[in-house]
Image 1 (tube, rainbow, N blue to C red):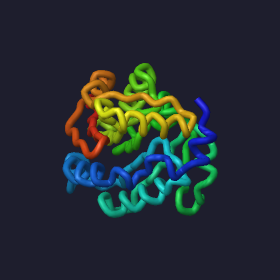
Image 2 (cartoon, rainbow, N blue to C red):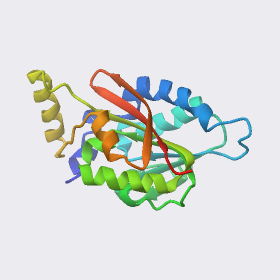
Image 3 (spheres, rainbow, N blue to C red):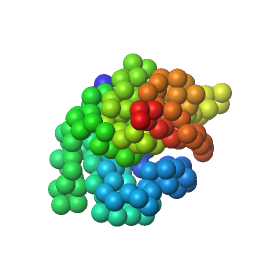
Amino acid sequence: MSWERYYEHPDKVMNFSDNLDLFEPAIEKVKPQVVTKSLKRPLRLVLGGFNPGAGSPEQFKEFCASHLPGDHQIVMVDMNSLPLTSLDAKDFPFRVQGRLEDLPLRKKSVDFVFLNGVFNFCDNQQVTEIAESLSSVLRPKGMVLTAMNVPDFSDPAEKKEVMKRYRDLGLKPHFRSMEQLQSLMKPLEILDNQGSFGYELGVFRNKKR
């Protein structure tokens, strides 16, 4: 899979703000389980996989400031170097290159992981490995909020448009329902599932205590 065209066409890429209508109510609903009155430390918030040209880094930072205010650590993770080197080090000091299947982060150190469209580029084996990796780096109550494209392929016009968009990016897409995703995320338990106009968001919590 080549990522050159993906980075060259940010206008055709799902950015973080595209799914704010899913991320915002989801984080407000589940954050009291993590952000308690007794919590005295900063949170560690991870955005995994992103296209910098689509504005996702800045959108994610604004989202965190609005819904998880505080002097928290925002970590940007991508398997490719280009998205990370394109970021201003002053605005995004914590940048980590690595695959989600083997996250180079300290075990039990992350409170929230946000994935926007990532699983649309992962086969079943990759999803399984990513779930294991996420479970390892998440704190016992840590959560994953993941949004993905779930198109209605019963509509021929929508199927044609969606498949063309991914072909134009030079990428092979993977589509699955949230129930299918859940069956692959064994180390994590699903807490919530929301859908909106061809997109779904699932909130998963680490089973490890």
